[in-house]
Length: 229
Image (tube, rainbow, N blue to C red; front, side, top):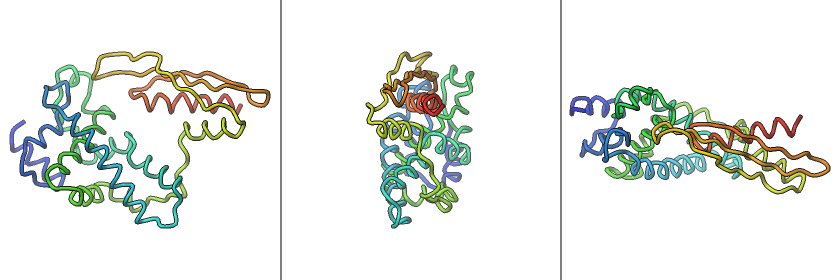
């Protein structure tokens, strides 16, 4: 990727890098080469979570811990980050290996989300937390402006856990049965097991998704449907 292309991405991001190699690394998937974005993604994930948590704390002084936790989870989940990446057209700038290119990696939700976090990490390394905060608030836009902690529903895993606790039963157990596919296109098969009693019949469900977290959520959702039926 030449410097002109990177400068185009800088304009979209609204941030000018002192070191363009950081930006290049932030959009480089591991399939493209050794200098990929995974370390920046690790850093960006933590920075993103902190900034969003701090923003919610300041914006919603009356919100409970549970409400802020659910709202933060909704704002930093992979699906949300992928949408933000699409809004910034990050997919057009991703550096992918030939296999990822053929399989449409530039559209894959997990890769788009990871690259977004890597961008956050790269800006933090150069300019610190406050510049990251300013950029994130700009990128999130209406997602933050219209955020309402009272409207966020609980995720399936939380709902299932609360249901099991209400019957004084052990918490659901999640086991990864197998990981399918190559590193850049893995699928996780997860089993969710709920033990039952006289009032609530137990069940075991299996779900497959492109991330372990998503597979656990889908398996929990299936379990909830069975238990509620």
